[in-house]
Structure formats: structure tokens, C-alpha cells
Length: 58
Image 1: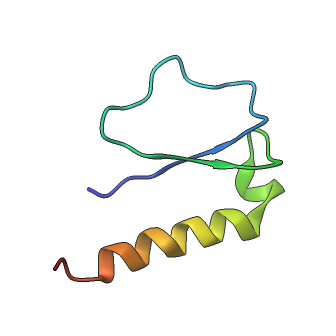
Image 2 (image 1 turned 135 degrees about the horizontal axis):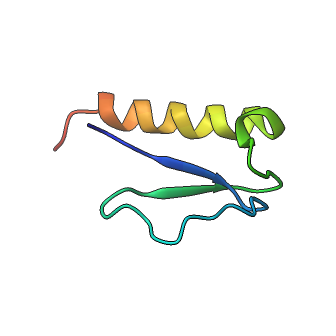
């Protein structure tokens, strides 16, 4: 299952350990609710992930 961890760079609740193999995208200027604080940045990350899945591998 494709997964992308989206995290606010000002979030005080950073996990102790990342999930192996899951990329982390930091949203600048966001705290714990990045999707509310920086919705355009979060939407762009989701669109980028979706496009990468829709592109057939070479």
C-alpha cells in the first residue's frame, strides 16, 4: 500500500521512530494539523504521490 507520512515541521509530537520504507514529507509552517494549517502544501504532496502512482514504471 503506497504511504506518505505528512508532518508539520512545527509539530511537537514527532514520532520517536519513523516507519521503515515510508517517506516523510515536512510541511513548512505547520504544526500538528498540517492539513488545516497549510492545506495547499498538503494537497500538493497528495497530488504528487497520486501522480507518481499513475505513472507507469519505465
